[in-house]
Image (cartoon, rainbow, N blue to C red; front, side):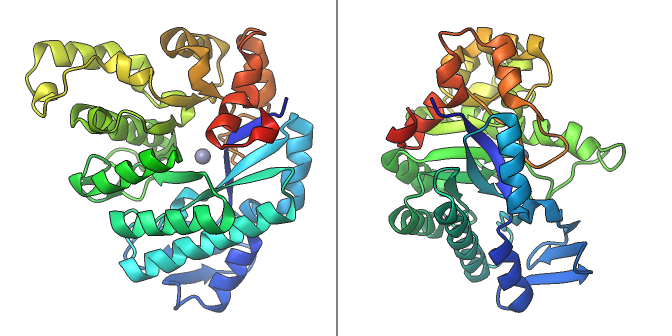
Length: 334
Ligand SMILES: [Zn+2]
């Protein structure tokens, strides 16, 4: 059995090198210095230090060995989703990201699988970039940030062709929150992460639910990060709203929120055996996959132990890697 980490981030060293050399061509502005670069993407006022540990390949393998993780699914740094870039730059930026992630995978194919980034501000372009990444690099997954920009969310009707295409292709969609748009009150105390991330995830999924995306595309394969954000833990509140208020049903949603939850996948990042046990009771162990959020300090440093502490032996192989292997079309790992 192969242990697969479904929540791991990377900025490939070759991507950073190319961006530094051709920053204007890729719509990137660097400030700071070599050790602590600060990046800004065209079309965004958001400025953020690039954590250089995202680029360190040797430390990555050493950590995986220590954790007992055989393979990581490499997704980009979510701040490099680049949805607010002008479209031509966003396409180029995604293509560079996919090409350089593919090179890291090709350099160590026993340890890595790749996930694409797509220019999601435009569904047709996102489909094209995804299809190219599938054809050229055999990528079966894509990372999806939880909104497109100010007041454009993942229930935006313009994304329907993208959901249709990914359903058809069987793409494993790895959702991830970010804080390109930081809500009021979250600027202090690291709340942009502790509250903002689970909030953005919850907002994305519930908007898709109530607007009928999951009814129109019932076979999407979506993994919700950080054990579902706030959603599983407030699910009966959404049910109550759907029972007693007209708004959640205003676009034709007829189902039960908990039934939607049972069709999604989740990683195991809860920092709490009791919380993980609750999630399993709610959606079933077959919907869970090991995740660490490598290499961030908000990650689970010992994800295999977290799974073993809670998941019974019968379901353990699936949670540790079997379910992820199936979604990645990776017969060698099952
Ligand atoms: Zn993450």
